[in-house]
Image (cartoon, rainbow, N blue to C red; front, top):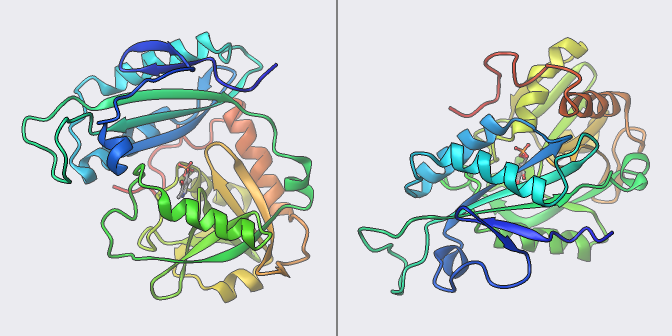
Length: 310
Ligand SMILES: Cc1ncc(COP(=O)(O)O)c(C=O)c1O
């Protein structure tokens, strides 16, 4: 069976995946003037949907995109319709769901959106998830540094906008270097994040991650891990970390909603720790996957969590 989606959901309508869905005048297409979220639907359960909708709202505010008042209800209904149409709502299904919202389509040209604006375009897509290749858990990920720096003063650095050229460029840099992903550093040389994931370091009983001020996306998985750590006997810290901290860590991992927790065992061609996925990383992955399967409440119902952007 093909993994290619058969449908998309756009502005309230379920459409065949083949064919045109959005206007060429849409500012998302023209300018990358939009925002998005990606989350996991396991057995039809939407992991941390509330957190993703809250972040979508913050990204919209940051770009001054007016979301419809009933955006949450529309998105929930759209995801449900799409997952069912795609056959991804069953108890054994595992899917990634992307919600994209753009400022909408305007016939005129130019950067400044005209007053009295068109309605935002809302699109939802879903793909089946297959487990990560065995090599990603045994050999794990190899990282290099991107040439692109992230500026902590940039007000857009923490938003999930559809302007992703920097991230595509960095991923291509990684591929050219024979690595799996690239890490961004801040303009003053501190660790920021990977192209689609946050980064954590294990240093003895400390679980360290770059501070929210390090030009990172405030990841939902990052936030879950910070809440999970004390129960696993680890001391979570958020700070300004360096490439040396990464090189000298006992373990390192990346985390995101869809990929979950993935071990990182080399940086710039040198092994991290033993050069094998470590016990903290593997435990974190197993417990996060259990949470996603609905087998553990830790995370979304545990009250206010550290590391969550206001
Ligand atoms: C740049 C970037 N950082 C971090 C993350 C992790 O965020 P989350 O855990 O909410 O998926 C993502 C997710 O796509 C991302 O694109």
